[in-house]
Length: 395
Image (tube, rainbow, N blue to C red; front, side, top):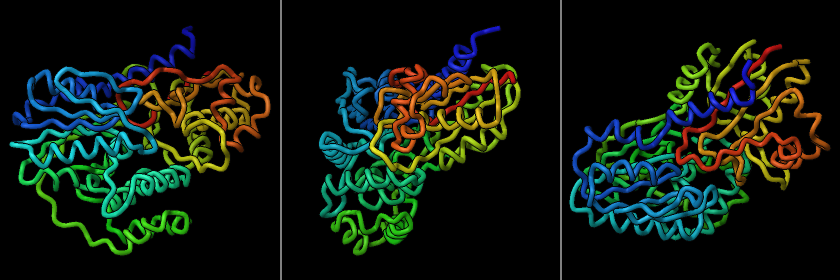
């Protein structure tokens, strides 16, 4: 019988491989006219650009990606920027992108992947990067789903919510999009730089008020949203989905051979998600994809995947399970502001952690899993299609 920890990792890696940015782009380049400019943004931006430049050598190319995935690329100008909280380097990258789009002499190829929202901050109106960073930090800690967060972000940006199309007009834009959003709403992926906005300024106000954040956001943000006009009509674009969470879950199922796939995406609060997963986990192999949320109440380090792994361990113990192993990880190899992708837990995990209740109350899942020796460490993968989970249960 194979080592269950090695087996869940093998299955997870099959899901990550299915989101390989190079293969995803190459498979769709026959649908793309020769561009005059290539813009790549997101955690998979460098590899997506590498694939495009192999076909369109000599075309000017700007790449904006996170620090972990940044490296030189022949034929491209590469910017490394902050994620998940925007920084000044991202703001400089955004201005370089805007300048290039405004002088593009022909069609534009946009390569979009998850993480692009934070990586390409272009504050609208009189807003500053500090204003946007403050809002982003509040959104990340409020337990909101990605669609709600991006609805707000779009209203504060010159590039999100179709801004790339406006800056490139009258040139045509084709976008190849690697989705990190469950359900693959193109307006939500990287905050929809080549897609119309999810909502309007008043919708952003409603989200912030419902989350109890309206009084906490900077005054300049409140003033901007209250005075903002509805967006103008967008130029047309071709948006092509080239990879997604669902495709990666299907690849995991193929790698597992026989497996039960939880049909609905795993979303919502991590505690609720852990119960749902355990309700549906069968003897044998169970697989799922999704993206959960965590309400931050403490000052510890961790991320949604690490905390979900721990809560699955707690739920399995409550049910008296034995002989099980579960991997919960981010396909990008980075969970929250840590160097871990998630966790690999089993029936022995809880016994290897001292003070788990206090650690969870402080959102310190990283420290808890480090004690247990159960952190999932993959390094940055160069892609991002949200989160993947595998459980092997033998009793």
